[in-house]
Length: 277
Ligand code: HEC
Image (tube, rainbow, N blue to C red):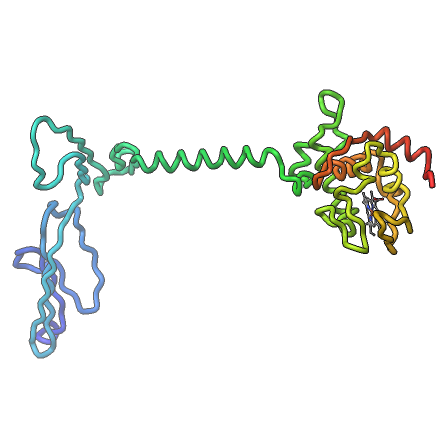
């Protein structure tokens, strides 16, 4: 029996004389706080070794099985005068069967900074949507935006193709078919490819020659006194009348050029007449 009593752990609660449990270590046990009153308690653990020496450890703790209490409008040691509105809330007793979040959240006004943040976000998104509504040229013919603008074949309510859409397609086609030689800025490459910015053919009131060159190409004709050894390839096979018109109009209204624009019918006529040279 003496050996039994050594090497034992006794657990005492508060000032009770009798241990609530006695075990041989190590031990894992459950303390049922629902049997205790809410408030401060102490747990005392006493261990005895084989030689009879005792180790004692006291742990103070607090039990709270009742609902939590929230107070708005009054803090510890506040100095008050007049009438003071106070908001009380109680939530989540450990024995409650259901957890009701609405009761745990004490109603409080939305802070000003949250309103400001919301306004900023709304304003920015409005600005962003408004800005994206008119697609930048570069993306105007991407699948995303062509949903909105359609391609050239999409008739507008008036029966005409929207000018904006035309300009976008012209710019895109120019980029894919022409800019490798004449450059995106229309400046060409000195001695190799002529500039189209300020070019007499491109800015001519009569667009016939302009259309002809794109449809049927051009070779060995000096422009502005410069002979170009490369040839301007013909595009009549690759481009439709509408596409040629779009490119012509892009060239006639870009890089400072400001010449009359053309229709697909004009291109079709030039195409039907064939090259004049
Ligand atoms: C492979 C290079 C190349 C490509 C691609 C090209 N061009 Fe040219 N382009 C030239 C050259 C070179 C000349 C000059 C030919 C000459 O002087 O005989 C020229 C001349 C022209 C001219 C006549 C300028 C003038 O003053 O007579 C126009 C207009 C023109 N190109 C428009 C276009 C358009 C529009 C496209 C796209 C559909 C295009 N070019 C694609 C090389 C190119």
